[in-house]
Image (cartoon, rainbow, N blue to C red; front, side):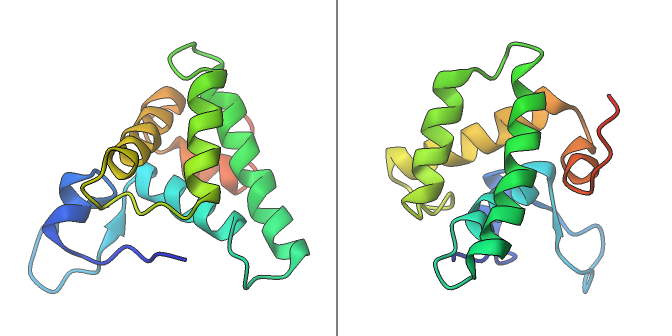
Length: 125
């Protein structure tokens, strides 16, 4: 599984928030949280029950993302394919850039701060 490290590429890709002060802990954006959830759902080193737990959270977020209409079935298929292939959203290839764009699209579609609440089980919207 790829880990998101604090660096300008992660910030530019929209996966980490910039530090507001030196020494501050890196914080994932909603897009970064979604990517980490998807990577954990596809982590071959994890047991099946753990992967299914993460995948259920991912499915919940994606279902909510499709409701407003900006994120559609085609986007979902592309996102799931890229996550399953272990694509790194911080790279320079078209696939890597597409993954970061799709993660940001999901985050925008569900609304600010909603990815974490959906993962934790708050289904209200």
